[in-house]
Every structure is written in structure tokens, then in C-alpha cells.
Figure 1 (cartoon, rainbow, N blue to C red):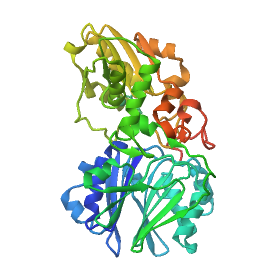
Figure 2: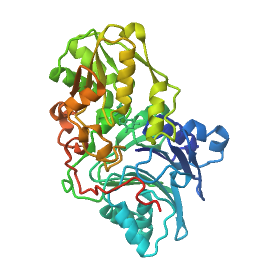
Figure 3: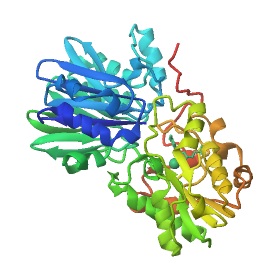
Figure 4: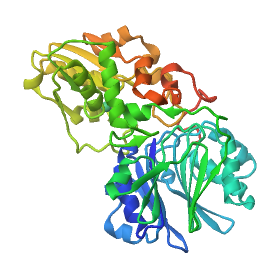
Length: 458
Ligand code: 5GP
Ligand code: MG
């Protein structure tokens, strides 16, 4: 997963991009980059690490210009190496183009192999690079036609920002998998993966970039192009953006994430009304569903586990080993709250099961009597090919085990997963417009089950 942020027509664009990426840091902690155009050339700065680690005032001062794009990365295609840090900048036909991409393409490898056979030379192992190659290949027809041609060839999830000559260009896949919003600031335009980044710098939200839309912003103002006919493709917004990924203060796909998560908790109570001494979340991802459950049940809400906020999700995180170590230092149980208590614990999701097992063990060690563990989404049984890090079915606990087996593995009294119906009712009018593939296995487009994140590595 990744976060992208673009600015058009605002002085010192790099400063705004810096704050925008700061607000999008939860979407990716491996690497960060900013590219800006000063009217003559594109300058960029990028590295592995967090926004606050990679940038400082001095660096931002050396990125002058009023148009620019930025990116934070959590890799789902291509390894975590400097070469794969975005924005990715290339020169072709005396022009420079920089790209920032959120989402995963499902046919990038096939396109890449074909282009390589034709003599194209790739510099990275990211799926995003094929987008640039396809645009360069079609550039003689003009940039807009080149993007439209490209969108007809690539399949999968893509919310993309391009910095090209004097323009900022945004385009989004016709399924609408990942969010992308447009706002205004001081007569300029801002585009962000999530609206929480707008709030930080005082941007007024205008609208979402539409699924299948290309939006070109230059000195003439914004110009919109539709690449696909309406109703040609079924909308498939990623429901996991609501469950886990996006920030609760964001509006995505037209809805506030906090409210949806509270609805999930309320629906959990409707389906699984338990009594206990109190309700508690595994913070932070379980907080909002826990509030929903507590309010619906009338039970008290406690924070029986305290999170250390200074544990960065570092760029080494994708390795299984590091994930396990970080669990133990991230959440600490409060013994006096938990001792001899019957507790309903709410979390957003169970993926591999390993983190939750460790956390539940430490709750038991703190003296909790009975534990009911409730999840605000159904069992995740199928991998995601569109940008969420659910790699292979073999790593997903619910792909191999039923609920009773998982309950025994977690060693708790009750394990309950929200139903698909409960999930859909929480997103209300979006219920026919979401991708549920990780729960149902019904993918909105053809996927390749042999896909691996390092597929393009040599
Ligand atoms: P598990 O017990 O399955 O190992 O981990 C479950 C926890 O992982 C939940 O608290 C959930 O919030 C978190 N989680 C869910 N999806 C993701 C993801 O894509 N990346 C990371 N880092 N954590 C996730
Ligand atoms: Mg969590």
C-alpha cells in the first residue's frame, strides 16, 4: 500500500507535500520521496525511511517550485530497496516525467515481459514502471491519449499522480479500488490519497477523482477526461480501506472512516451480543469498532492495553520476524484493569494470527479470566492482488483453518468474526460497490495466483 500527494499552483509546493505525506504516513513507512517542477526542471529527493527522517528544512528549501508530487511506500510489488523508491522520474523524448502510484497492477509482469522482448530497459522492479513505459511508447499522440491508451492496457488498482512539464495529472483505475481526492488551496489544487491530509494544511475538499478519470491540471485549470464508459466496469472500492487501512478522520469513497468503523462495532454487537465486565480494543486499529460495540451494548469501554506510539513502523517491517518482535514492545497490558475480568476484546482483523496470539497471551498473563475476541470483518481467506499486504493464502490463518480451530490456536473462550452482511450494512449505500475478494474469493477481475511480490526480481 502507499500514499500519494500532489500540488499544483501553490508556492513552495514541497513544504505542502511534506505535510501531506506526514498525514499519509500510515499508508506506508518504508520509503518516501518528493519531486517538484520549478518551471524548468524536475528536482527530486527520496530515501528509505519515514517522512520526518528523510526530509528536513534544508532539503525542502532545495526543492523549489509550485508543482509537485510525493509518495510514501509500503511495498506490495518490488522489494524495499532505494531503486524502488517513488516518485519515479524518467526522461524520454526530451521530456521528464515523474510518477507516484498507489495500488497494485495485476498484469504488470506480463506487460513488462512483452516490453522487455521489444527492447525496453527497466530500471526498477516495481509494477509502476510499466505505466511510464506505456506512456512513453504512446507519447507521439499527446500525453492525454498516451495515458488513455495505457489505462486500457493496465489492469488492477491504480491511483496515480504524474508530474509532466507544467502540469499535474491524476488518473484512477475504473474499478475505483484505492481512494484519491481533489481539493483547493489558495487558488491552487491539491490531490491526496486521503482527505486527512487536506485538514492538516487547510485544503478545501472538492470531490474525488472519479474511477476511470484522467484529470489534467495546468495553467488553464483542471480538465477532465473519461476513459471508460459509465457502467462499463463494476465499481470495486477496497473495503479493507474502511476496516483497517485509511485513517478514521478521512472521508474515502464519500464516507467517513470513523463512522463506518463504529457501524462495524455496532453490527458486531447485533450479531454477537455478549455480556462481560467491559469492552476493550486492541489499539489503535480496533478502537472505533470497540466504541461502536460498547455504545450498542451499554457495556463500559476500557483501554486494557497501552500503545507505545514511538515504535515506528519501520522499513524493515515486511519481514515476519521483525513484525513479531515489534508486537511485544508495541502494546503493554494494564494489570489492574484486566485482573480477574471477563473481557470482550475487539480488533479490526485477523490476518496471520501471530500478532493476536501474542497479544491475547499477554492479556491472559495479566490475569484476565475469560476472553471473547471479536473481529470487525469476516475471515480473510484469499490473498489481495490490489495492494493490501495479504500475500499468499498459505500465510492467512483463515485460509487453512476454520473458526473453531483458530479459537483453539488463540486459546480463548469465544472467537467471533463479523458476517459479510454485517460488513456490508456498515458501508450502507456502498454495499454494491465494494471489493470483498479477500473474504469471498470473488475477484472483480482476473488475477494470477502465482504472483509474488518479488516477481520481477532477477
Ligand atoms: P495477526 O494477529 O493476524 O498477525 O495481526 C492482526 C493485526 O494486524 C490486527 O491488529 C490488524 O490491525 C493488523 N493488520 C491488518 N492488516 C494489516 C496490514 O496490511 N499491515 C499491517 N502492518 N498490519 C495489519
Ligand atoms: Mg491492529
